[in-house]
Length: 290
Image (cartoon, rainbow, N blue to C red; front, side):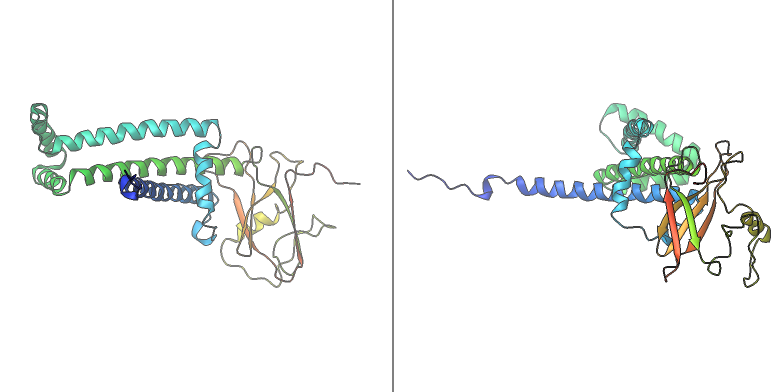
């Protein structure tokens, strides 16, 4: 009696399982990228920068969501709250969807006229009919998937945007910032701002420069180029990001800054001939070395 050789036909569910797993990975990747993009958009928008001009690496958008969901205790708490809200909103929306469709159950037959009356009150009779007709056109499974995706997308948008603003304000505030303190050294002809180290009290000459825009803004910056820890609140310049040959630095906000206040940001073009020095430090030097 010969034994039957096992073949792939003995496991007909394996292709379906692999296809489902691949689909889940694809959906997860889309949600991760969406979350990372919204987070980065909200973060850099706080500093008045457009994320599309920074040309950030693609893989970074898939790593950032871990900061959004698990970055700290409060982020984890908001994540759990977002999960609960998503489950409730999805189930509630699916319940409304079932009320709008034909169903053989007597309970839904009783509730459907009430649902129709509410639609008519909110949107009017003609619009309510169009809503019911539009719902019945699409398969119920497609409607359920669309509702689930829409609510998950909205919750992720809210979560990523709020966390991006929170982290940006934290980094923008001097007392809580994790961004490095910056010292930029360059030739005087390469930059219209800055002070000579041997004469910090002398305003730089802009004889060979032209200006377009707010002159007062330039004059105010000319008096605040140097980090100063002796005043209150301290004035500290920090590095935000370096991308595509540009250095973005900002003046950190004080701890009592208003929610609408934004940091002053400077975009400085990196010199291509090596006559520029950039010093980064985790904190300021309280006094000059002897």
